[in-house]
Structure formats: structure tokens, C-alpha cells
Amino acid sequence: MDIKFRTFRLCFLLVLWMCTSCNAQTKNTTTKLVGGGCEGCEAIYEYVDKKLIPIDTLPEFQNNEAKLKITGTVFKKDGKTPAENVIIYIYHTNRQGIYETKGNETGWAKRHGFIRGWVKTGKDGKYTFYTFRPAAYPDGSEPEHIHITVKEPYKNEYYLDDYLFDDDPILTQSTRDKLNNRGGSGIMKPIEENGMLTIERNIILGKNIPNYE
Image (tube, rainbow, N blue to C red; front, side):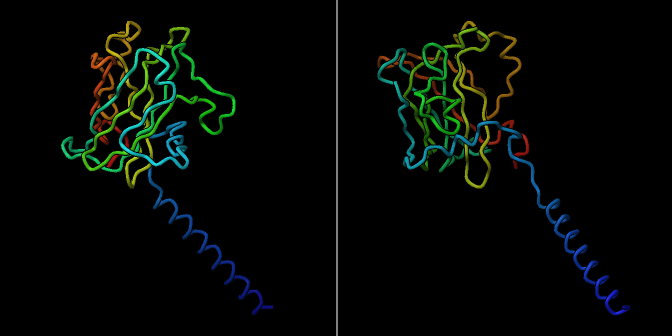
């Protein structure tokens, strides 16, 4: 009985030690997500088999006015070095202020709609989207905006401040003051060029992003 008891006790202590070690390792290796929580940011992976390049044209670009070109350069945290292989995902409402769907959407497209696109920066860090200017929500609760998520190598995806339009009357000073400038300011001044509006936004990875190292 003594031998059996000692054997049982030894096995029990061994299992207890293993569990404690595993728990300690889990706690020690757990890291906080870059950017904090981000509902829907995983939609950045929903480009499926599409080969990403630095330029993308969103659905309904040809059928809507005002046409809009979004362009800029993505920089590393130093604000000077172009960042390569950064995926950018954007989505926005239609001209009625609705995240339009076709009815057969899956994943986050059920909420984001089909007016969305993806690019991946090259060595120069440049990116361009061709789309159209979205409308504000029908109830006027939010100014015109374009959502943006980024995914850089070796970090989890995180959101940046929306693209906003400086000439939007709904974009009040109170709203401007509440912005966090994640990745730099998202307030853009549209300029008409070649029959379409152009906004240029340079993005600084990690700027005003929580838990960024």
C-alpha cells in the first residue's frame, strides 16, 4: 500500500508541476494585441484568391459620382522609410449611405458590404484605390467616411482613423477633436484632378497605436 501510495503521490505531483509550468508559460508568453481590440479587422483576410498589388479599383467605381482616387505612401514608424508588403483594406457606404450587399455575402461582407478593396504596398510603400465618394449615414449620425485596416508583416491587423473629408459639413469641430490620429490624421482635403476627386494620405505605421513596438 505504501509503495502504491508513494507512486500515486509522485504521479500526482508530476502532473501538477506540468500543469503549473504550462500555465506559467502561457501567461509569460501572452502579448497584447497591437492596436487593442478591433471588431471586424479580420475582414482584411477575405480577399481570398485575389493577388494583391499596390492599386485596386472598388466595385461600382464606374457607376457613381463623384469618382474618388485615394493615394499615398505607407511609412515605417520613423515616418521616413517606405514600408513594403503592407496590406490595406478599405470599405465604405454607397451613395445612399448604406453598406450595400448583394445578398450572397459571407463573412464580414455581410456587414461591410461589397464596396471594399485591398492593396499591398511595394518597395516604395505607395498605394492607390479608385472608388467613389461615399454618403453619410441616412440619419446623419456620422460624417462621410471610409474605414481602413492595415496588416504589416509580423504584426496583427489593426484599424486606423477613418478617411474623412475636410469639406463635409457633418464633420464638426467636436468630432475632429475626438479623433485619435491613428496612423496620422485621416482628415483629407479633396482636390479635383482629371475629372475626379483625389485625396492623398500618407500613413505612418505605429503612430498613436497602442501596444506598438
